[in-house]
Length: 113
Image (cartoon, rainbow, N blue to C red):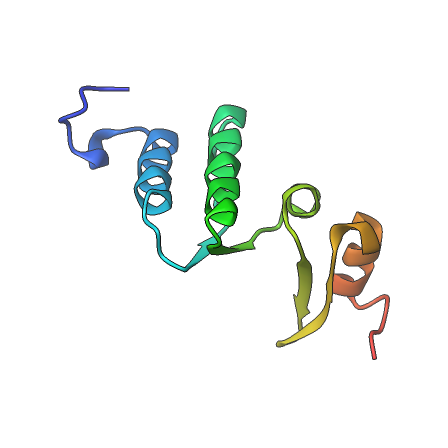
């Protein structure tokens, strides 16, 4: 990382993303919506992101994460919803669903009533 006083725009993409995530996760907004928050982060950055999400949870704050990384979502989320074709197909606790079933739902191989 460069000097802390350097503009964020001069950082590498990964460090720029870390700075942004750190700034956002430091706030105490009741709801945070994160779109693909860990894409491009190294394992240390991913760990830091989820530590901050867990801290938000302990404070009673909500974080909605939209991500293509289904395994990651099942490992850290309280609930996972499947969204396809403009509607929510189902909402599950991680213990109620598998990566394979989620994939089949997203691809239309399993129809949900």
